[in-house]
Length: 219
Image (tube, rainbow, N blue to C red; front, top):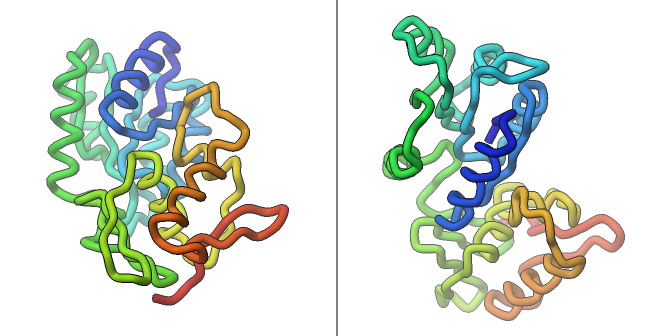
């Protein structure tokens, strides 16, 4: 979420986390463009009146050379004139929400995006002998038996399986799993990985000492 008003950002982030979304908050346009280019976000909630880089410029940056695999962008702004909406949609927004709005309307639009399918979503993602089905929040290990995942287990496994063979650091995994939550126990990621190994096999996630964790390439 790119929102420079701390009260709005905090309130929306809290509601989204309560509804099982992982949320990362940035407060300026440059950071929004940099984060979105990382490619791990299904949806970007974008205010237009951002410092450093205006939201329209962020949109144009994200859509420059876009092959259709970029994140869904929902604009949420006080700019409610028809001309503003046309400019935002023409710049690459997938949806446009005028402030003030009820949270329930935003969440309904997020559900609609989910029904269409996120840019990253596939029926089942596979790597290292692990299969992850995001739709059912289940994963299958070497024994072929699907097991249910908690919200945080799903977020961590999703981050790793999207980048097979790539080592993700503790900080990177904390960002994917906890988003903007401030209080994170130092060994929280270790506990989640331990639970995933217990469900999917001891070698499903490999530790690279001093660097982080990874799921190997291959099936």
